[in-house]
Amino acid sequence: MILVNARDARNVPGRKTDVSDAAWLADLGAHGPVRASFVPPPPIRELRDLTRARTIITRERTREVQRLEKLLEDACIKLSSVASEITGRSGRLMLQALIDGESDPAVLAELAHGRMRAKIPELTEALTGRFRDHHRYMAGLYLHRIDAHTRDINDLSARIEAAMEPFRLARELLTSIPGFSTTIAEVLIAETGADMTVFPTPQQLASWAGTSPGANESAGRVKSAGASRPAADPSRPSSPSNMPCSPRPGTCSPPASSTGTPERTTSPVTHPLKQRPARSDNSNHSATKSPSNH
Image (cartoon, rainbow, N blue to C red; front, side, top):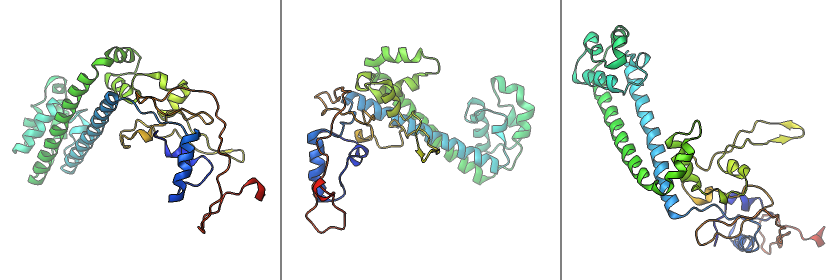
């Protein structure tokens, strides 16, 4: 049994939409016109779950910060126009003082630390607003949710660090590339397994990662076509069927090996199933004609 991307099966001639087409799909799998999907070993799948969960929670934390900023603007508090991070050390002290009932802008501005001390006049003006009991309650709620997300992110990062032990050398090599942070390196290792042999060419890796631009041309007109959605997108289900190994048409990978990694092959495959047998039922679907019916 192999896992196959539904997109590849759909592109093979034949119908795959009702119960009788299950036999057709079985023939496709038996004769090889479809390719096996990239199924990494269990340790990589577990690491992938951790990195994707961290990405999702990080995005949720950012949304909570944006909601907090919108709440402050509703109260005419323009803290984000002076502080680059309203949940930083100085920002948290000022927000907590606002929640506790302090309303004097000068007193709030004096809570600044470090380089923010040079912006006390701007902070005094930015903290002049109408912060009511409703804003205090909502600000406390958002800060509580932000802190909960932060704890989850820290817990995930610690677990990812332990899971990355076998791939520490690969991560160090990746972080030596300009623009690669530790987080990016960990995500790349989790998505590819640090084993590039499952991708026969760099172009196939780029296509699988969703960084290859699309091509949409009809009648000599080139239409807008962006890059495909990456398989590493954490908003997609972490199902191996979303991750085709070889997107190049005309190539085929045999069933996955015992390690879960499909073997490499770059030789073109001639499809042995040129025509699908005509249907014997009275369905409204049009049957594929045999050569003798032309």
